[in-house]
Length: 89
Image (cartoon, one colour):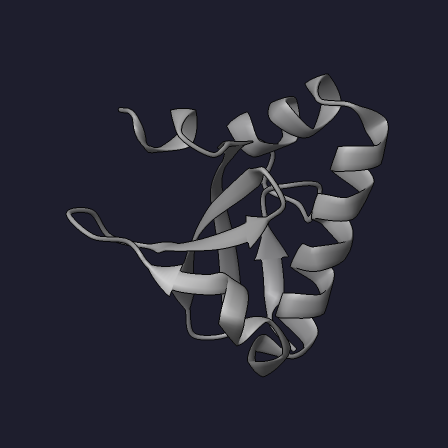
């Protein structure tokens, strides 16, 4: 099982702020999918892909995207946002 940093998994940051601002049902769904991925990455392999032109990975959850990086047993949540807008710097 991977340890989660950010996104209410600890670490704070923009991901936590985003989860507090979005609708509660979407935030709950995102947290659940992150936990599932942290426990068993193979279970979400159809919804995870490596980002192009920047480091990291994305996890698709409906119209939401979670941008994260995998560092050994640590899953660092970098950003959470709606598809389309999340990729802009």
